Amino acid sequence: MNLPNDRKYTASHEWVKAEEDLFLVGITDNAQDQLGDLVFVGDFKVGAHLKAGDTAGVVESVKAASDIYAPIDGEIVAFNQALEAEPELINASAYDAWIFKIRPVNADDVDNLLDAEGYRAAQ
Image (cartoon, rainbow, N blue to C red; front, side, top):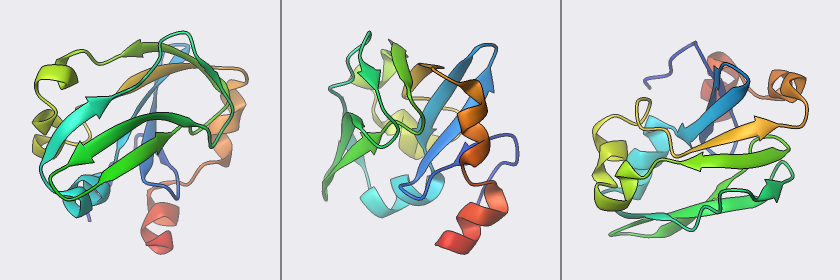
C-alpha cells in the first residue's frame, strides 16, 4: 500500500497534508482503488465551517458514491476546480490530487490523526 509519510490519515480514508497555515485534504490510494473509476467530485461548499467527521462533499464512481469527511474542525477555503472536469485525476495520482483545503480551528488537531503506519495497521 502506497502511503507517503509527509501527511496524516483518517480511518475514513482521507489524507491531510500541511500547506502553510492550511491543510490539503484528499483520499488515499486505497480509497480510490476500492471506489474504482471516479466520475464526480463535488458538493464541497467553500466557506462551510465543519467539525471533524462532518461530511465535506462527495466522490462518485462507476461503483458507488462516498462521502468525504472533514478530518479536523475548520473552514473549507478552496475546492480543487480541476476535479470537476477531470475527477479521474484522483485515480491517476491520489496523493497529488487534493480535493479541498481547510483552515483549521486548531492546527494541532492534525496531530490526533493517524500516521502512515497507523493507517496501514487500521486497514
